[in-house]
Image (cartoon, rainbow, N blue to C red; front, side):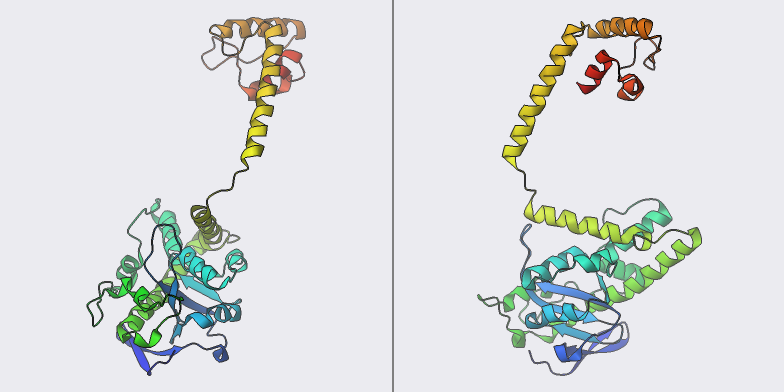
Length: 325
């Protein structure tokens, strides 16, 4: 991938743009990352086209051939993303890089999740919508991201990165207008700047209320892990061993019938109309024989069938069988 030297303009600043190569090494302790893909279709992971990185000072483009080596070079860095699970899934599909360790160590910061956690901490509710990158950029940076920008052929840029994919999944980078590179980098710059603001606000809240940080700022790490896991389930479904479930169901039915028959021998028929009177009569007899008192229901009319109230009397044969049932 060749690139004529360019600068990316963002909010009255200009940042140099370079194609990252392995010889560059680590770009910094913290940086933002974003992946551009072909069109997203349902729950299918789209194809990676181009990645962009911003470390607070300069922008880097990340072509497909360098993606795995880039992330292997940055296993000690903290990475800011928006909707992190999506970008991680795209990278995993492309090169198999495993983000698990970075997630567990709190080295992936999802600004969408962090924003919701901060809102929950300060306003008492979790925003269900209106926290997209362009909304956050307008809210925290006071800028409008170019979401409807078109290229020289009239294509909407954010929807058209897939136009440069060949059938063999290689990418014709040299055919990309500079507007595509500009669009990709602006998203990443915005992500970085918003992350700085949100992390500072999270730190303030943590300090003000002396909150623990074992699961990241405002529990971000565990929230991201849950979001990532749920995303995997949505992609792959849940594997269920039908034969095991059927066998377990048959075993449970056998046990239910066993206890049901034992209860009948005591004079109690489960699920039979009027069995509350049967139950109360048996309990009254047990109370007399064992000199105990079984609690009543909240209304006071009947004897409790709540397991918590009966557990201490589980040594009595009828109640042992009733609890098992």
